[in-house]
Amino acid sequence: MTAQATAKQEVEPLLQHLPDDATLEDIQYHVYVLEKIRQGRADVAAGRRYTTEEARQRVSRWLQR
Image (spheres, rainbow, N blue to C red):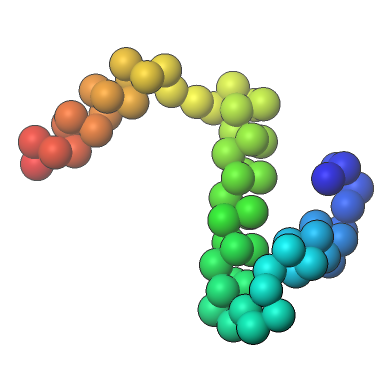
């Protein structure tokens, strides 16, 4: 999707790929995942990311608590 795409335009292809019997909960989940991917890509583009080693160190500290 382009940067100028509206939220509705971003969701339309998703709705076309979901089965006709998809529930509102299914749709909400897929929209949530798309938004998280969009946010992640924006973070990477802005340099907000961790190397694999940095991520391992952070997770290791969380698990020690």
